[in-house]
Image 1 (cartoon, rainbow, N blue to C red):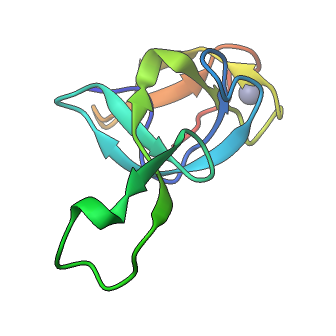
Image 2: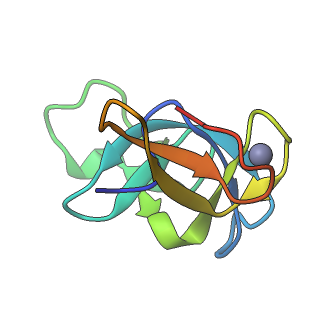
Length: 104
Ligand SMILES: [Zn+2]
């Protein structure tokens, strides 16, 4: 189970986009990677792909490793580590280690 999920807001803590914030657009639990809006743009030369209508260079985001981001808690607004807690009904939920609030 991955701690970061789709629609989380995260802070990048490593790599060339360190310090950027963004929303998680996709999560790839099997690769432990997330695709974050506006983070880790890679350029691709479309000329290499014959079928592509637009020639030239395009930019798009590439997934980054989940260990390179921290969740930004929507309650205390700080980058935080995530803990887990079981609710009374047995469901597992994520909690913010900074303020202790339930994140889900
Ligand atoms: Zn918090």
